Image (cartoon, rainbow, N blue to C red; front, side, top):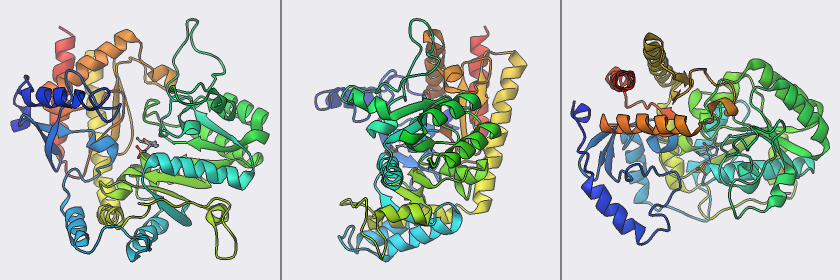
Length: 442
Ligand code: PLP
């Protein structure tokens, strides 16, 4: 296997590109999430499950553009749909049939989506879902899980990257903005919840209910650890939100890939609104806000003026619409089942390697998603998954080991499979992990 051969460690072309990039981008990259250890891996092209980097190395891609590419790279049905469209114009101020077709596909599959709007990113989808919840309830606040990533909207971002202080974790954490540039006043309207903490959730939502428009919930938040939700937690969340008229906004930007009808259905949550993105654009920029017809009326209805007019120059652009439709049509229930089967085999294999060596690692995830934690005890909330300095070093070492074995494993985020993969790719991942644990135990 070409990718299993030792990688050309010099990465001289990537190094050269990085030095050019440093002269034009403030930190040498265009995304804070670009791995720079030891240098960013510049991509020449993508083919199915693999990338070819600027130095000609073939790499198994477990990032898939942050879980977007459920079919891997250059998926033929998407390419054909897009090439066909390019000849006929790529964006219009007028609506097209393409947006209706993608909307029909999604509303038919996902029961909670009775009506839908398209935007251009997951960040925008979460932002408009929060604004819609505020417009509907007349309340300003957002309750959200500490450590979860929901994009860059101020009220979705505050509380994402909290860490323990000098005296450990705060019992009731404050949603301090993660980045400079976000006003501290945002914290007044962001209420943090701990994942899988039923008592804390009920207490916090009840105490602040009159100020909370929505609880923003990703049923398996990837940055917070890709941790399984306890059924009791989701039940308490639903019951408490209903009791106080707080809307449930499910952020399925990433986890829609967990099943044919999405993640809320899988975990038994009945959201009022869903924010979607990533896989539904087939590799092109997209976001979507969907939900109950009664709530979606805030965007306007035939007989009412919108409380929340929402537009966007590239919203529902035909390229994303046809690409998304081609990608989603190929995601039949059977395709989801096959991915799930591979994911299960992989997680089982990783766990078996850990148990065999009694190694201080654990594995979380579901469907086509997984994370390997340098933690002996499987995390049940963000605080357990948060890495101290020693664990962070070990994680870096593992990511670098995978890269040397020709596998791109995301650092501190969800890794994912694609339909372009078969059992051979699962074997490669398991072998690389085994090798790493062997090297560590020596
Ligand atoms: N919500 C979740 C759960 C995400 O994982 C992401 C992106 O990774 C976003 C929102 C933001 O989406 P985008 O990067 O398309 O703005």
